[in-house]
Image (cartoon, rainbow, N blue to C red; front, side):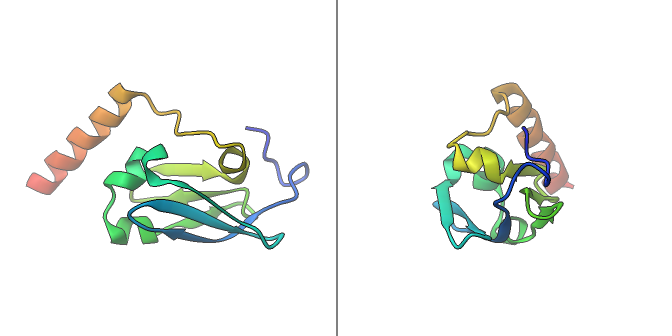
Length: 102
């Protein structure tokens, strides 16, 4: 991901996540959305987890600490889905189940 602030001129400034989409509002006035199913950790997250996000750097991307998910503006603009493998996602889901069980 080549998204260093010195080479990238469009940044995220706000984020909205619904049951269907993730939307970044960008500093150039555009909003860009993608289906939430492109990012399984967001899809499996609770509304509280989805709404707890932080900008990476000056807004080159967004991080969801409770879901351990990162999405860059560049990848969203290029329509890139999550690169997480099914095995990794399954391990993460299993860990969530164990934590929820107490």
